[in-house]
Length: 500
Ligand code: BES
Ligand code: MN
Ligand code: ZN
Image 1 (cartoon, helix red, strand yellow):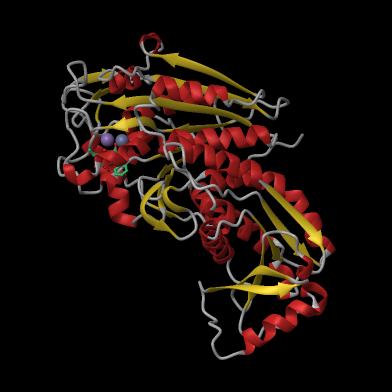
Image 2 (cartoon, helix red, strand yellow; image 1 turned 180 degrees about the vertical axis):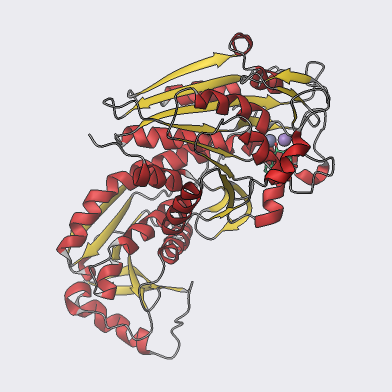
């Protein structure tokens, strides 16, 4: 996949198709589009039958230089709108050309269309939408379609635009390479992707500037990681903790810690999931780990000046003669004892150990991401993540980044009056709040995690809804969405890069 930017007249395009952004009343310039093409499409745009409507695209064949060439007229907002609109347009366009088996295209830059080079970001979000929409998971398809997207060529008359696209294209491609690795892992089924095989897959793709350590099975107990061990002990596919370190700012000790829930399959354990819970979706319960792998891998490939520790607890939550019995009491890495009242609340257990480890490097911030509760889907639906933060400034900063990057989050409260319900009968803690699981379940899960982060600045994102969608997200897609990678990379870039 390539992203290029050229100064030329659109009608001389060489790619398989040309995209022209249009809106009602648009005045296309000869210099950008070319006389021939303008005389061919102006009557169409000025005719009564053309549909100027959001989301509508006209697909035409136009004679140019004695050949019939494919041209798409794509509706865009009349005035430069919010970035997400362009991501959505790019996403929809990618789906359309997938159907038309178009493997490369030229597009007249949005900034040329708006005749405005002050804000060049519309093109960036459009490209990101195209990359999101062109993802395909064909691993198990014995008869795969032949087209994949190979090139996006931006046509512009603006010198600034060319410089900008050349500058950002490698960064966008790196980020999406990693988002696609994430999606592949999430969609790969649990007979192939289980804790140790997943650790191996990550190692096989590890950039040289990340170091990785795996603490596997019995070693977990020697390292006092009993929560991770216990959640995974019911499966023949043994659990492990993957630790990664990227040192992009060797001159400082300052570091950040990232943690991702990696349950490679969640049956619920002895508290087995019901039919209604669509258990087959639970291959996606390692989305958090996949997200954080994508974040640290991108940061390392982009050589960001920041030190990152990643902790990815991997386990399969199964039912067998060796699995947890409800009521069992275990000791977490922090030393706190936990009564396991519900074996389906396993994510918070593996995170408890990982979060405690994360505190050990005295990080500036700990960020965790997890498909943690069905409750967050009830509260917010599938288009946004719920999040919690123990500092106001963190919440504010994440919200700002989230809006800019078009990955939506909504803050939920770490409501202290609920904390008492997490006290165990005979242990320090129990892993669920109230027996009526539908009351404030997402809040209880976050309050449980809070017990393990000491008082370090901390953000917890619950992506049970948006990480893996059953209906289509308008620009991140259906199924594995890759939500969180762009958000967290931008968040880190904004607030945590070290001066070199
Ligand atoms: N992995 C699930 C959460 C989940 C639910 C993710 C739906 C994606 C879609 C998690 O381990 C879980 O089972 N949570 C329980 C907790 C409850 C037993 C306290 C839940 O939310 O129902
Ligand atoms: Mn569960
Ligand atoms: Zn789970």
